[in-house]
Amino acid sequence: MSVRILALVGSLRAGSHNRQLAEAAVKLAPEGAEVNLYEGLAEIPFYNEDIDVEGSVPAAATRLRDAANAADGLILFTPEYNGTIPAVLKNAIDWLSRPYGAGALSGKPVAVVGTAFGQYGGVWAQDETRKSVGVAGGKVLEDVKLSIPGSVTRFAETHPADDAEVAQQLADVVARLHGDIAEPTAA
Image: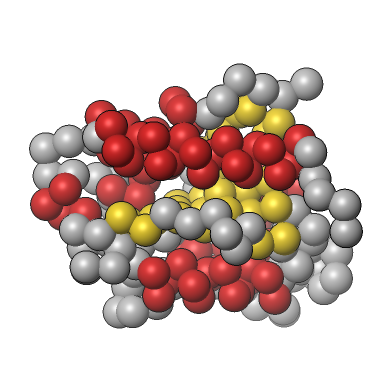
């Protein structure tokens, strides 16, 4: 049985370098792991408790929850917008955090990685994402990190999958997440 990892990308831009990282993760998944790139974050309305009631949950939010519930773990790819997490990714986390105490993230291993133009590769956004996921009930893999600076120049003519250093680092992240899911440590 293959470990199922759901990849969420915090950028909606077609040429997003974080999306390219997620595409590379799909290709670099180790044997026994399957990384699925989620499509559809743009269709999910902003979280609102008034519409998060049985019988009224928007179909796009239900699809996201179903995909996360079916996954064994998640990997979130985040750019950095104005020093923090993009709204589309935060919104996905908010939907996945409900119902309170039993959301789709509850107890699931989650790795957070990404790339950004700045010299630190989006570490502020990644830190905020880890914080939000942890509060939402996810089991954040705090020691699994990958922040790639200078995305605009580094990936101007090279897909992340074709950058040997990045591909190896990303493969290591996916393998560590896979390992945590396949053989969870005793609490």
